[in-house]
Length: 233
Image (cartoon, rainbow, N blue to C red; front, side, top):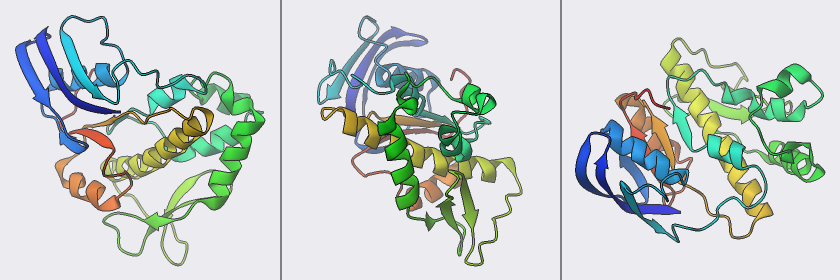
């Protein structure tokens, strides 16, 4: 799914605006435009007269027909200032018998309790290939057998993250891998499944280059990045 363009009429503080977008990275610096993008991504605009969107392959395509729509939807947005610990999510998925951990999980329509999901989860963890940590020479991000991500060097020593921004960027790397896992899982369930675009909100400008260097998303995948932090997510 690619948002090619949309037209806003009397939407929030915008009287009229036509926006055109490309596949790959799109930088958004207007809160109302970003809010409209979010509504279109999640399909919340079809009955709204103030937003008219052109989407490929088709605006009315049913993207989630089975599986875990709520969980997949949660990976359409990453808020840089959020405290979500995505690095622990796979570990949470592995421990359904732990009620405390289970309560932390987002609603997944029961798919995480199926044998199909358990098989895909274990296969993904076992086959995970470590990748270089962007901007940190000699460090790579690994996925441990218990389902937890970590950043380590060649001696397996963990990366010391001295500030919240560095920790948030690490969680963003984990978020992108979780998104990859859920997209692949949805594709296995529904052959007509199409990845939705996603938003990264509040990404500091000095991290934009690091993100591009990471090569963690396909060039044809549509990404909307807001370097400002908007408080409506």
